[in-house]
Length: 293
Length: 269
Image 1 (cartoon, one colour):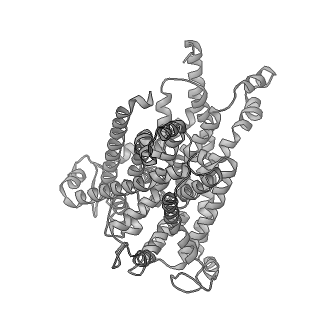
Image 2 (cartoon, one colour):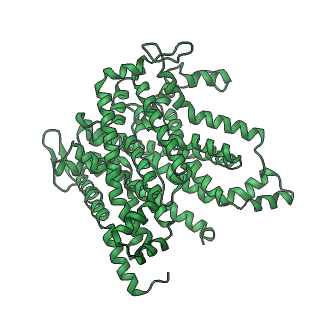
Image 3 (cartoon, each protein chain N blue to C red):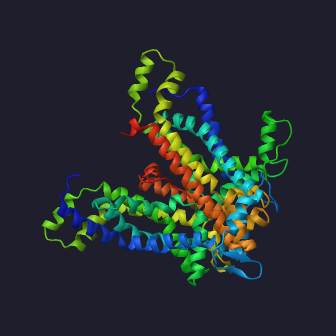
């Protein structure tokens, strides 16, 4: 950067004054409420006395002691990991195929695949509920006609259904991340490998895949963190019994009215996600350091 | 350029079917002439779209969503445009921290934001009001408004501004006649993306909405929790149609891939 000290300070003042309204908004309506939520998780609650603003560890002890919460967090994690794997297994090849298409088709299919991202998640999940519905739902009929399964599979109110619907909701993020990485690829390297006698599978495995790996991993991080905190899909497909972190926190807040416990669940989810995301980002950056240089 | 082989094209077809199937099935079922959920094959009817008129809560929720989306996107831009100008052209200490803070609503799970807003607004005494909903939505759509404005402000040629100043324009005239028109595509598409995000948000809004201030996604969600019938498919089909219209517009104005891959983080939910 070739700015002198003088312009730097006047620049800084101008910049700060322009960004000040937004900064105030964020401190007032994001930072303070988050701090209040963390504090709330240490408050006491009783059926009749309501929220008591004291500092106790009751909610945190309950979450770490009661196996119900361990099971619920484990389910949240498992569902998110499997949904992420599905998006990677299918999204990566699709992005590659998409990138090899002719201009007009590429634009059209990119719209078709990424467009759902902007369609209400309630409408999309309703679609899966319709496809899954009952033993003679469309999905089962189709799978049995093709011969992939012999007897109907239960999708509604199961983790299987939840994972499929989540993978569908998150797929655009993976395709987008990989597609962005593919844009940076030099096609000449692929051509060189081909002209030197490499088969197309070898090219994908040895040339393309290593280069787009950072894109795949950053897509996976986005998909994982959004899946682990997803609400609509687990609530509609999972039903009232199959709880994940977000739906449990919702229940504590709006049905049981035990706000401090709900706040503790939400804060734990936030901390776990921040640790996982920051940790894996650091790992990826170290692993692919030479690429970002 | 090498072409995709037959295996790749079959994979691609199945993939596209997987992506559009749940959306198509909603729209298809919405045209059923029956009184129950069914896939109409021979007869189609608009009865469930007409039935919407008899459910004022859906109509009202739709109105709330439109107002909320329009209002919060406009307010978000009022904050985002100066912030984008600051981030794109000045270097100061804490600049990276500031942009991380501004993009944080993308990283913080919406369920956590919903809880934080509910706690905050209840304790300051505006819980359950439309004002609270607007403030919450301004924050949540802010990153989208900021990112697209930032993208076009970064790409702008500043020598035109210098020319305006040297020709005697004052700061405000320069902003109004030179800067604003130059970054307008970013602002317009930022507004549209912000509107869609506000219009679609369920997870955060479900914590804040009360019977008078329910948005359409919240109304739909609560309805689905009780029962799934053709009525909610016709609501969903209408929502899908509106979103598609905005999507195509957005693609024409700015290019969808540019909107969604604009630098500075992920997108969501």
